[in-house]
Image (tube, rainbow, N blue to C red; front, side, top):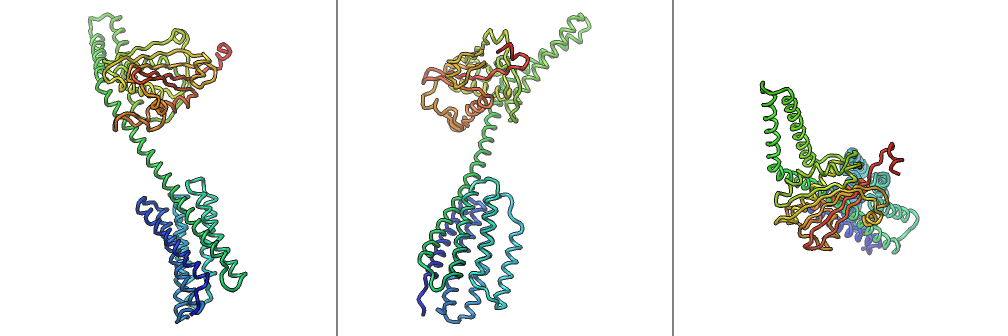
Length: 476
């Protein structure tokens, strides 16, 4: 019997490595249930079995096994089919990474046609060496490399491209070695074959895990958006009971005014005043309904010009209902803003939500009661703006101060981080202040906080004044 050659040992080691990667991917697939991991599992397992069959093919080819002709024909057919199976699953894995929602429809019929062609060649006793079968891998990995390079940026795309490049390099080196050398396989090529196979497996694992991280992140974002929406709906539900008496007052005034309108003894002036009261009451009801809907329903960001001071004053009744009677709300607007209102360009609905979120946080910080103060002013002080990280200019400053429990320096350092919250589970998602931070950044403003443990908290919101073109010269 002829002693096994280095080529046999190399194929045996490749088989062990491929089967190990395949088994690992099977475990990953059973855990994460991702199509890419399933495809990689079957591809590596098929490649491992192909390498094992190649070991026996080489032994028969070298005359080390009996029944050479019959066994050689069977092993050749097996290597041909396994090469097609491994290539097809590798293409499926590539598609699952770079285009998860679009599997190539041509893959199955093409793979079946190639497998049938190779089997017919074997049965007709046509020359079909292992080097010819390797061309199937060249086609599969070549397609994968081109697809990965040309695909849009996606998680794992670069790792996948490097994987295909390494596997192509391995096949080309094998074909060149067969064509240009005679005798046993050199030791350096055996070592290189091991390194390339291990590195290719690592890159395929990296590509699969990149896809898993991206999919998990998308699922988490979807879940947390739903949680944030649920929190808004819960907050609106808590306010609904306190809003009910406002609607009752509106309906009462409408009823009283309608009685005056229908009274035949009422003077014309009294009827006109009653009609005006009906219109005003209906308008108040409409505005209150719109505020509730805007708070409960998420909408796309839409920047408009509005007066923050006027909007804060309009929000005070809702804030008073939100924080409760045991927490009096004091609101003031600087004389400069009263005399010359300033408009800002931002999302007005998000501004309302930020104010309501800050008020809700202040309420939670004062479980046994306290005071909440809100004031609006025009800020042009370079020192004050510099402390907020803003350049010189004109900003509307909205300040909210509570007498609650305050925050520690460690909490202050993280309050604007998404999903960070000090509230009990189920009481908050940690998105309120992160949303406020995103809002002011989008409006090219700033938000800052000052607090101490047991000494209350103060939030400042700075929004740049929108200067209309016609008034630019006057304000310069």
